[in-house]
Image (cartoon, rainbow, N blue to C red; front, side, top):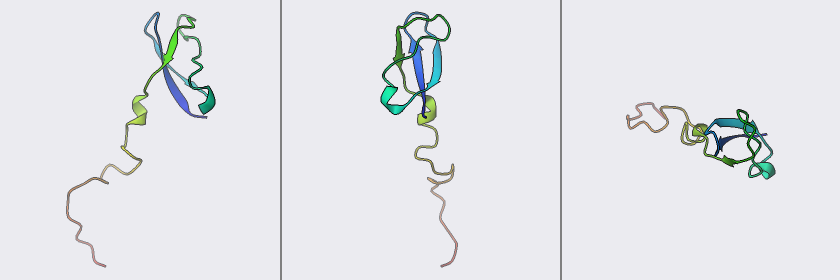
Length: 67
C-alpha cells in the first residue's frame, strides 16, 4: 500500500498514512488532535530522484567508455 501525506486543517499537523489508492481521498483523522478536517497533500518523497534513476543519471559529463 502506498504512503500518503495528509495535513490537518485545524492544528496544521502533517502526518503520513498507508492507504489503498482507492482510499487516498478518504482522509484519516488527525493523529495529533483527532480532527476529521484533514486533506491529502503532496509528499516530498514523490519528487526525490526525479524518476527513480541514480543521482548521476542526468550528468552532463561525457562518456568515454568503449563499445
